[in-house]
Image (cartoon, rainbow, N blue to C red; front, top):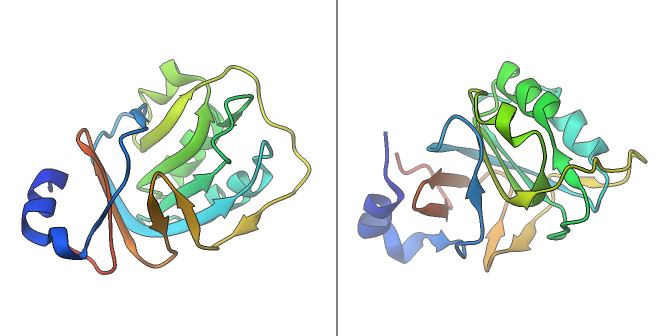
Length: 158
């Protein structure tokens, strides 16, 4: 187990600390892993295709452009992520089915909830560098998330 506060105390000179924009939704409040990314706007096709693959305890970071007009992850995708071994999902955007997601064995952080689903046009980019919440999410680096926030490290810490 880790605490982001303790990791910040011990490693603050090498960490990026995300702005406190995100709410917790999944059953696992604390989660960590290697970063994998998806950049998409109001189209969660690439999110689904990533969560269909073996997660290997990675964290899927989704840059939905901060849109609050539709959900990028719902209960089906969250359950798929849990079943396929993803540690967590961080969404710069919205999720839906929050009541069900709260019972799924995965970490989920997002800006808010929105009941409307996204479009499915197959548009998006996978494993590209992302920037939001004043930090860079770089595939292959590590993310640690808990009730206190989200931190990014260039190498494994805990």
